[in-house]
Length: 346
Image (cartoon, rainbow, N blue to C red; front, side):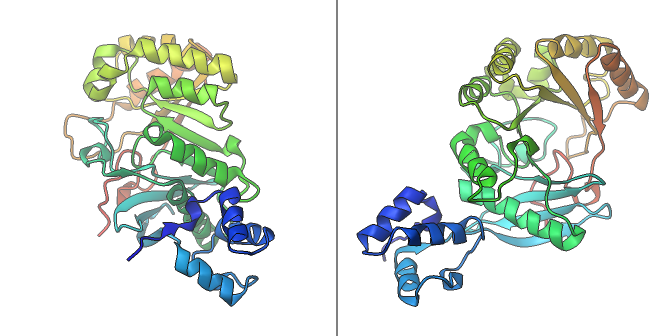
């Protein structure tokens, strides 16, 4: 049996060529493209402004490999964690995070993860494959629908901080964001999208060269090489000096501020040496620090620093005129908080 291509893998130009080749007018391609993206239609039968004959042609030639929300859990704080089933029955997780002023979608970019961050539950999973751009797009559509259903307002922000390292799936991330921000898709502003990386230096430079419009966040956690290598062993291949060069390059090209994500752990990076190293790193280019509450996983070595030591970080960063915020965890009771995604939904 002939394997059918996913129609959403075609560009508008390719779709137009298909219709012309089959003796249909070019405007039919625009109609179908709108159904696929702007209206997020997953069935050819629902494309009511095209003929039954044409719908049958599309069904014979193509499939739509949309995602499905297989199960979801709702936290007492309103956070929703989704088990997303892909067309090949693999599962990833995505999260809706509500707050007073915004509703954020935390989306995944890979099935599993190829990195080895000691403190992250996802890193204990094998990386099976990258997500396609339409699977990335579908996560946002699903979370937007949940936002409207449960909170009565649309999604306002997107963060690529779910399962996987986004910059190791770069082309699909870029294509997915292009669809999300396009008037032919969801029409969201790229200023409301943040891509978080663990520090893939050469890809940060490529993003700058590509003149991306979204925001960049870097999971730093230590600006001392030996400590960073222990908590994130893969960073031995991406030394801090390379990351510093990439950060400078990013700002020179884009003039966009970088956010450093930083967890403070007891006995690991909660002393003055690590704090001073972070301040020095932050001064490479305009930046801000997002101190993230540590969310316990199965690794017993990592424990959150004391409130006094976290406050010490905050005060000294502010004294050095480095903007700092503390991000309180959401969805901890359903393992939906930062670093906890590991396909545990039953």
